[in-house]
Length: 395
Ligand SMILES: Cc1cc2nc3c(=O)[nH]c(=O)nc-3n(C[C@H](O)[C@H](O)[C@H](O)COP(=O)(O)OP(=O)(O)OC[C@H]3O[C@@H](n4cnc5c(N)ncnc54)[C@H](O)[C@@H]3O)c2cc1C
Image (cartoon, rainbow, N blue to C red; front, top):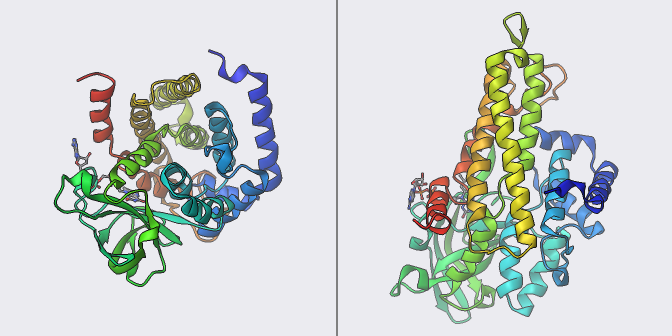
């Protein structure tokens, strides 16, 4: 297979690189390359830059402003943006809600939300998980009772990524307590500024605030904000959850970490020599790099299969998610070990120039601590292994 040799794809890669060189400021790129959580301003500003070029929602259908790129082109685009340090765009809006909205939303909902999302005018938060409903999401308890042409919503959601940035929230609620759990769930869109919505910070291991718990106390939500039919929300959410884990091998993140690891190991000492020349440590780097190469080829093969109409029910995305997330943690652990005391450059607030140690040190340990979560979010690795066992191994 010669994915990269296609001159058209290489020409496309150059086009993306030229765009990034022209439009991405160095200070923004620097923050993202160090793994700092992006600001809302950076994410929306970058969405607008991409929108001008017609690139803010590459994977949406062309009729809703997508690009029509092949899966491989989308991969190239995402890889180049990530490696250059471009801010992410709102994942909850583009990757999760967007496909549900253009597949199941009515014309009014599409008009109200798709274009403003694509333009970078709206930031979204995902209200699915609850304190007692994560992997077993169908057991969720947040309740919505119809009162005239509004639902009254009560309950608690948790782990709302960037919920404090959100202008709008999409939420799974229980609208029928009698039927089987999956049958009584509806999918609502909620204004984050509505009375009764309270978003409270959860500070994570990296001592930063990107996560939240969200309380809904007698929140009045127009019934017109329900996506699709009442009690059918579970089937709409399933489409979203497939998008969430599809192709989340995070090859670009793994590549960036690998490059940083090698750079750090060149500057750090081991005995009288450089750490990178230490036979034991370099063998561990090589082992991780072999896994990275294998992951990249597996991803490219899955993308090529998608292009050729692969069976979408096979949980290939689960395999990629398990391997990619475990590799992030493996390379991250090598980085922390290589840094030693220099890992104390946690999240420096006043620039990086005067700090001792490798230039790549600041932010690494914080990012490593935050990435303990990669094997949990988007569906835990244990759940992915269950899916692989059933869907690929026939167990
Ligand atoms: C950083 C981060 C960001 C997140 N962002 C969001 C967000 O924006 N919106 C949102 O709604 N949610 C979000 N989540 C929540 C995430 O989807 C859940 O954490 C995840 O689904 C796991 O649920 P849980 O935490 O309740 O763990 P549990 O489901 O309680 O699982 C606990 C442990 O038991 C294991 N386990 C559970 N069931 C099984 C089983 N059947 N077989 C084998 N093992 C099992 C799990 O793998 C895990 O190890 C986020 C989570 C994190 C960590």
